[in-house]
Image 1 (cartoon, rainbow, N blue to C red):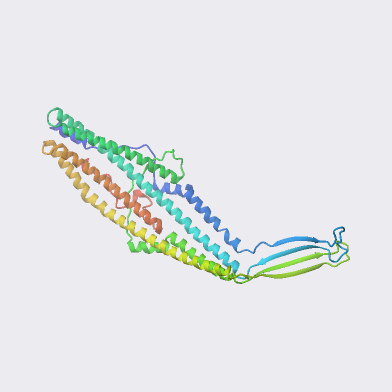
Image 2 (spheres, helix red, strand yellow):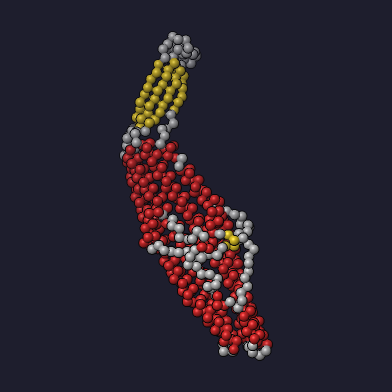
Length: 438
């Protein structure tokens, strides 16, 4: 009997596998993505390019500078001899009606500011994608760890069942059932390794690393605190969401475009100056100069400028409707993920304080009963599988919780996911999960 009890003690001891792979913190990967991600760099370049437009739009059109020679004969050069002959140098400058250039510059400034928030939104999206992938990476690694340990434990159960069967204390059905479950765990591990490879490839893609480069292992993820209410988060989202700020600046730009379209009814000025040299250095004829002022008149306003105003007004309406759509979507994302987070939080507490401890006690009881012959092997096996599924369920809910906070972060700018995941509060440790099985 002492030998049997000793065997069961050995069965319930989990071996600790120390990975030699480098631990990758979430912070370090986020910093790497901010520096190397192509989408972030492209959006930053697009924004910086847009900041170069206001000065261009607010400047006068380039002037026309030129010269011409006028001669009154095809056979002889008449410059200096005929007063109708001359060499001309001229200058022409178009000057938009006052207010047009300032409107164009303001439009470009508002569009550049809108693009700045678009760039910020892209950056947040990339960081959120990375964090989600990181949490999935943690979950799949944790699943492999738990599955491997349970497979090893189950293999030991198989050996015990075989030993009891050989001495006539067990039945063949127990052995076969255990072997089937071991095969099922092997299948799970293969699928999990495949999923791990896909997630790691996604992370390396976001980081712009070579896809065949090593990635290491994620650090232990623990639950972040969610202390803000839904109304508080929704208020922050309405004020700080990058997409909304971009939409506001786009509305401002469209309103100024409407003002500019109305100003197109006003004429632009064309200022010209010409110098005439008539003597050809002979000194017999006086030079002449002239100054001109012309108007670019919107003569066909009923076919051009009028429709330009209508087009600009419709674009203002479009921008306002787009703002409402974006706001509704932002608030939906906040509420959807807030509900997900709070639900996962409740389930995590239930797993931690109720389901897992109870399942562990049930397994302990089944082990004790199996030792003395009061519980059959299938009951013992069922308790093991049940606890295994609950352990996976805990980490799955932890992952969903962290991912939901990440998506709220993306649209609000709040720091909800702990900057150092190993110091976040409200976590469950290895000693909490399945501690009774050691």
